[in-house]
Image 1 (cartoon, rainbow, N blue to C red):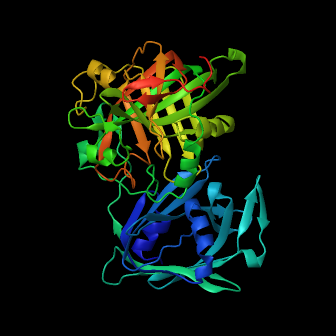
Image 2: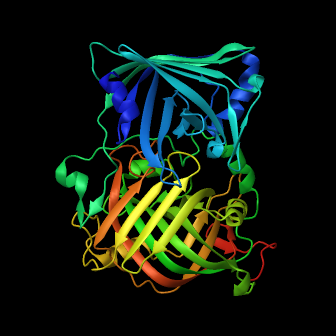
Image 3: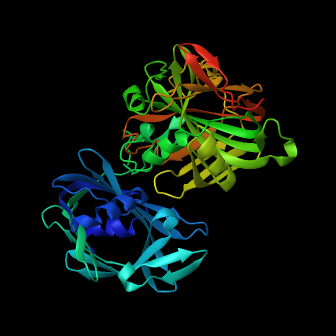
Length: 486
């Protein structure tokens, strides 16, 4: 029989979080350092080593596209200069009759493993790698694979503690990566929810969050090099137009110190009632296209955007932390030519008339978002715990912003994109249930740093983004010569 801490880890239907310290994180063969650094952004292996490394393991039950149960394993190793991640999805492989952990971008690799239960502990053994392409599974040659051995032993003196040792070996190189230490089961709760105007966790007990491994900031992100290269590409060289068939705004109040470290200089965080805000804009966009092009060529898709109210030289505006979309062409174009930092995710926004639902399933762990907004009967007032005194005040601060700022790098000037839009006829949901991997407790938004303040819904809004301008001198803006007429 499994020890209680192991049973919670492998059999629980709830989120389980273990925190502790790895007494040693090691690797061998210094000449492999470039390989480790290449794998780090894919949340596989990493080059850093050390002793007494704070570590978090978060296990989240999820469902795949066919409603089959999975477990998302997110491991965070907090080195002095950077956080490193070692993540995967654990699923049952019916063909093999055993479990497998999917790793790499989109779970393109997996490693079947077996569990060996012993008194007070558990041994996990995985051998070989498989490549998953277009629904097919290909066994990789033995020399391209590795074996993983994980030894977990419950602490006989502490029912919530677990001693962990992991070793990864290659058939030729031998053991080349591993760690060992102790983790302890921490109190875990589902992300906070608001229903019928009441923050459920706050009504019942003090709010608790789970740590996860997703970063919106540049800390620890190898893709920051790619971000810098993309920043050199002209942003918004042409105006864009679309119609928001439906748009939901999920407005999170966040401690200002948490947001300030995510906002690049010289932008200043805009605060109200001593709180900063992150607005998650969930929009069903109809016929998005360059403004000179006819409506017929536009692309209809759903996009979820994370934005923060800021100021630049006193002018109110927005800064974008990132976004998710399922349309590959718009993801590529958005990553290269816009400020939205678009990720390819399974993103779906549904307007059923009396309710709006939002579902984002990220290709990487830590960015999932789910929202249920009931509009019939309509809500009347903001929640009692909202930082705003009225709907009008909230709309003025969160919605009525008509410029977005794009800081340059390497001495390049500040850029801005002006926005023109239709009138917002704001609807307040009567029932709200929102769960965000990122904002309800993560590396960038730690436990207790923020909460869902209010939500808005609107329909049928025309939107226009003008071509970007750059600051030619302090307070003076002009269009670059390569931009097209709007």
